Structure formats: structure tokens, C-alpha cells
Amino acid sequence: MNSGVRVSLLDRSRIRAGEAESSALTGTVARAARAERLGYGRFWVAEHHSVPGIAGAAPAVLLAAVAGATSTIRIGSAGVMLPHHQPLVVAEQFATLTAFAPGRVDLGLGRSPGFTPPVRRALRETERDFAADLAELRGFLDGTGEISVHPHPAGPVPMYVLATGSGLQIAAGLGLPVIVGGPLLGVGGDPAPGLEALAGYRRAFRPSPQQPAPWVAISLDVLVADTAAEAADLLLPEAWAMARSRTTGEFPPLEPVAAIKTARRTSREQQNLDRTVASAVAGTAAEVERRLAELLDRTGAAELVASSSTFDRAALSASDAALAALFDRP
Image 1 (cartoon, rainbow, N blue to C red):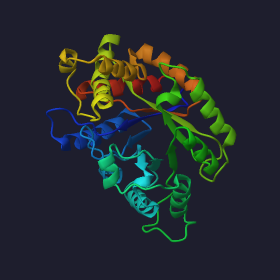
Image 2: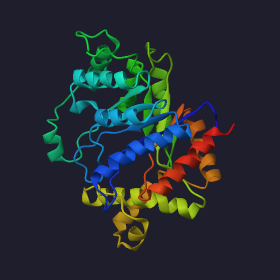
Image 3: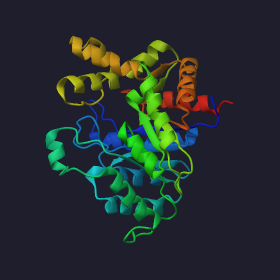
Image 4: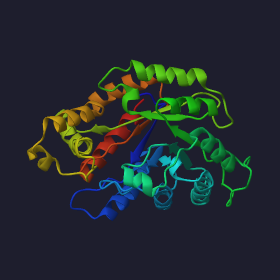
């Protein structure tokens, strides 16, 4: 595998059926500590509000716990949903984090809406200018804003944009690096639209003090096991949760593989399950290495963000170790 590519983990604090929700958060912190020992370059957490299967609602708070359990790995949000917050508050939160983890904090930002209309109402969502909010936030963090942030950040807080479609153009105009996933990667489908969107980002990129040249990370589910069949089983819990959410509108906790295999499925649920499986990379180490090498070469990505999850924590730990080993090889 290309030794110049950074590999990182994204953990959304997935809740397991039959488990206390707090265990999802302590599991995230424990996984970050293991990621550091395995040599991962970065550990990301995310923001989701009032989603039954996800405990990760407060990235800045969770990252403080992660910072306390680690000492060298970079830590970041992938991401904070900026339309839910005032830019000054986000700047203060991440400036505070740098006091606990100087030189290790990254700020990934997105603009996904709340999960359901009631959640969007609770978040007081309104029409916001994402580009203007990004620019204002950057000003607070780099000291060029209208007011000063306290505490002053203990070093730079690099910003990243979770981008699809027009988000890529916004990032290009502001000279910011991007993290892309989903349909833009063309995994299991036609890669052409995604490649053209990335080419447009690179053409339109305007250098900035943080980022002198275009920079792309790709994010997707990656799971490694001893056999292809075992890897396919590891994919099932997340794929089943996604299939149910697309069918019922509720994103549930992860369930054991055995329960999913015996569950009755509608044709629509099966189609949605198959779609999620097709968008992931799973298999033996050799199979995963081959598919990732092709994907990294096609996209020109500088970082792989593995957003993997499964019900069995021990199997997930083994997969993380196997994936890290692929990037240790020359």
C-alpha cells in the first residue's frame, strides 16, 4: 500500500442492541487509544442528534475524553455540523481542546440537516450561508476575526470540509481540504461523476495559508477479516441498520449478525441492504488492499478515513489491526 497515504478511523459511537448507550462512548475512547497503539494517523468522531443508534452527539465533549486517553494521534471531528452552531462557539470549543491536546486537533465541518423534522426544529435550523460561516470561523481560529477567541488556540486548528456537490466548490474557493464519501467515490457504481466533481474541486482550488494545494481524503466502510465470508458478516449490522432507516425512517442500534440473518426482510429492505454493502470495501487483507489501492489511485486521495462499525467489538478491533498493518507495509 502507498506509504504516503495516511489512514485514520472515524467512530460514530454506534450503540449496540442490549448495551447501555454510555458504552458506545466509552467504546469510542477505548478504540481511539487502540488506534494510537496501532499507528493510525488520526481518529475522528462525528455529530448526530437524536438518532436512536448513535450516541455521538457532542464532538467537542467526546474529543476531550479522547484527548485524555491518547497522547500522539491527531484527533478531530468529521464532522461538526456548522449550521447547528454559531461559528464563535465552535471556535471556542476547539480552541479549548487545543489546550488539552496542542498540535493534535483538527476541525472537520459539514452542513447535514437534522435527522428528522422534529430534530431540525429542536436545533432551530434556519437558512445559513455555509461559506460565510466557514470564513467567519476560520477568522476566529487564525486571529483575523472581528473579535478574539479565548482561550487563544494553542497552535493552528486545521479545518476540513465534509463535501459533496456544491460543498466541494465552497471548499475550493476558501482553500480548504475536503473529505468525501458515498456516491462521489463510485464504489459499487459509476465513478465518473465523482471523479469529475473532484477534478472540478482541484481546478477551482484557491491556495490558502492552511492549504497551498488541493487535498482530498476519502471516507467509507472498510472491514478486514480472515475470509471474505467473515468480512461480509461484519458488514451486515451497519448495512441492516441503514436498510431499516431507509425503510422506516429510524436508524436503529447495531444488532448481532445471527439475528439479522434470521430476520424477515421486505424486498425494499433487501435492496437497501445490498446498496450499502456495495458501497463498502470488505474482504481478506489481500482483497481489501487491492480495492483500496485502486480507489486511492483513482481519487488521488491523501488519506483514507475508515468509518467502519460492526456489532462485535472484538471483531472490529481485529479489523482495525489488519487495516493498519496494510499501511505499515512498503
